[in-house]
Length: 292
Image 1 (tube, rainbow, N blue to C red):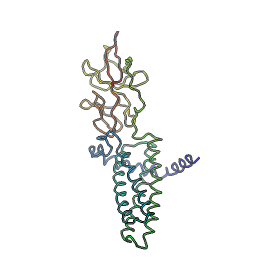
Image 2: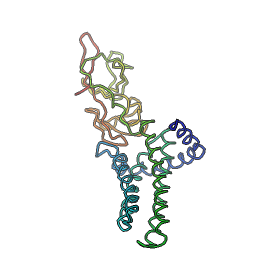
Image 3: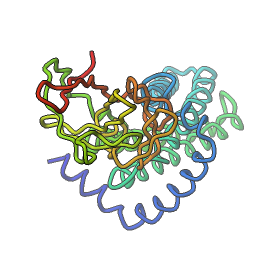
């Protein structure tokens, strides 16, 4: 089966992918950690959708058009299109670097391979562009430039395949709550800890069970705020995070969500967190349901 052969081929790269990925991730994590507003922009928090996924389609389509224009004998149009395609690849790479800075585990290994292939394709395309500009529309080296750009597209296609694995196999940058139903039924809450008088401790995150779900609770006087405990970004345990100005901060990648309504206020997460209504239950205790 082709898919199994391809998985084995990708796994065979782990010897260099893992150490290189550790180095590259550390570098990019420090870089984007020092520029959180830039990281949030490149992650796509303002868009409510991963920006890298939006940008990656553009260079693939544009660079395929380069091949079409070369075949049709339109050298000037092909050269301009190639230049635009390279710029689109650079834009997609910047967004990808921001995602990569907060990618862990096996997904990081695949993302390292994906990024390496894409950067290699970009360099090969730059070589093709340089040959084209030096040769002109009718130069004898023109055919060599065309061959180089076709080879670059093959590398680009391989990189796109590996990138698909990062998302569809490992779920990187996918909302952890995509398949959670809204639910309107009130269900009893089971806090992991309570004070001596039976009340929920105030002013700090408390984990609680709500049926099959886990919540993170914050008590403010008589008011109890609740979000789903699993971070939408990468599944981090929000109950182990800290409260910062009415927002819960994930301990893994430091995304922040407003406790009042689950609104994401800082990336790398681009998705809001499911919020829950909480009320006192007859006979004591509390119950909750997901907010509309």
